[in-house]
Image 1 (cartoon, rainbow, N blue to C red):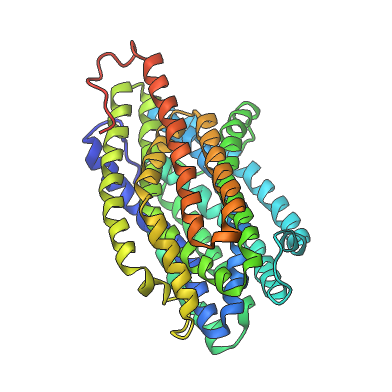
Image 2 (image 1 turned 135 degrees about the vertical axis):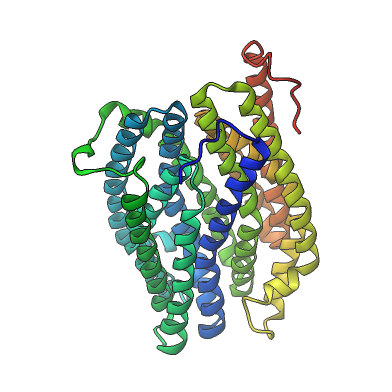
Length: 453
């Protein structure tokens, strides 16, 4: 059911809207974590390293596609906030046609270049065949990932964040069952793990589309409504390009970091893989609150309510602060137990290396939270250049420092490289935020006292 976020309690709306997004993101990460746990325990640490090496490539491509969906979502939310439902449908049709075609091109290019990409990041020869097999299978299912994310973002743009959660829950459950069946029972190896993911994603996409066409008339495109609007396509490309580059830049940075990690040996590769997946889980709620702020700000920007826009920013900061204080404490205490999920008890070196990294990086999660809220604020306003520049600065600092420090000081030093990137990003976006307030001082004069919280 669509939800108008231009009226009602800001904190309540953000919390109600963000909770399903948080759970959806956690479930989405379970695809990777389940694969890693089953592959690592059933096949071995070489297979775990292969999945870990392939993951940054997959994530770079997937999040580029998701960035396209997110850029289109901002436009959809603005049209919904303006109550311009005809233009909303034209935007959905235009973005869906263009996005599907682009995804198919990316799939073809990915399959043709997968082995070259793996060699570029210095994948060890004993890991390369497994990593290539896994990567190619995942590329085949990329279009299903796009279709689910597109329609999920269309629902989110209109204030519906619960139904995508249910579709994803079904998909994750199916993924668990198929992974155990294909890998553990039938012995299909790493290809079986990838096949389970693709089948699950396809099921999720089809169910999501079926729901939209039956129960969501605001975003359902009928036969006579299909169109490729040239002007809207230009605007969508402008929004989506920056969002897609930003999303993929994060994972490109991780891919470059993986290239720095790979020569350090299988134990460190496996430790980084497990720790990265746990870190993804830890950061999900903050990222989801940021996405909730994006929709909230975009709808209120469409409605022209400036005071309510900043109220969403302030309440978002309170939510991420409370969350990251809790999760940082948990990771500091439970890191070894969580790392032990990914490998057998005898792999003490992998557990120790991964735990050291997690404990160090968890100390700086709150800075990441502030960055996420800034991102949601600027994205909702359509100021994609600021979110893009912030992300590029973050990843550039992270990769440069990692290249200097990690080969000599090990995986734990990477945590301080990551933190340095967050600090640079926070300073840049904070400066842009206060510049934005200063430039709009007349527009915001009735909105009350401005503060971070």
